[in-house]
Length: 274
Image (cartoon, rainbow, N blue to C red; front, top):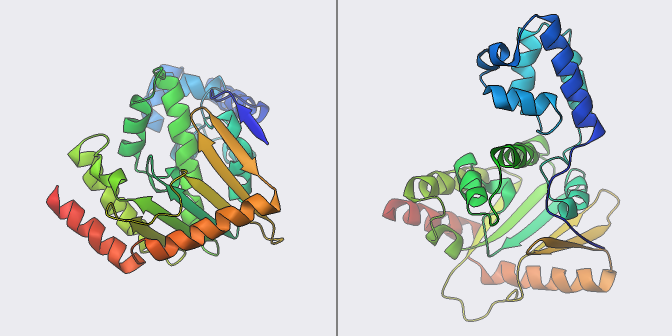
């Protein structure tokens, strides 16, 4: 199954939340400019959320709930929001599967996976995008990515495995300060009991995934899915034979990459060298 079209789209649930937020703001007799400092967001962000163009961050929901005395309505509406806005169209089906996975395996050679990114690194990646993204588009994608990152801590019984190329950290996307923060964050994530991080060293004569990045996941009913992504396209893989190939490659890479302990040691040395 394939799809394309990279622009995030709004949804009925997002527009519904925005309408509820606007109604409570007007009930409180506040303009968007007056509400903005109270919820610690810019006026254009408040406007984007009310128009259903931006996914409301969790802290926005909590602050607006208190400031507007919304009787729990905003928190209730937020629970029904889909995580689709801010996600590329081709990725949404995979994102829904992520939310119910019992195990998730990710190999990346281009950028640090979204689940492990810091805000600074994410913004740097989006600023590199060609053609350029608008501020609203960056805001929507950042909010959606931060929502996905909650999976690491909200699903402690899900096993997350990441194999990352050493080159991802040597590239220093966003600069030295962003890279230093990123490495610290990845090390912190690797300390979680349900997260395993392995680094594939630059000097590796045999490599099982020279054909590119991949993801695999298992659902509670023991169904396996695969996902591969290129420029502006993504492919959800359901064919058992194709998934078997990806599983063999991932298993081989686990033996080729550094152990989790050695990977953390390498990351610490890289951070110290910055």
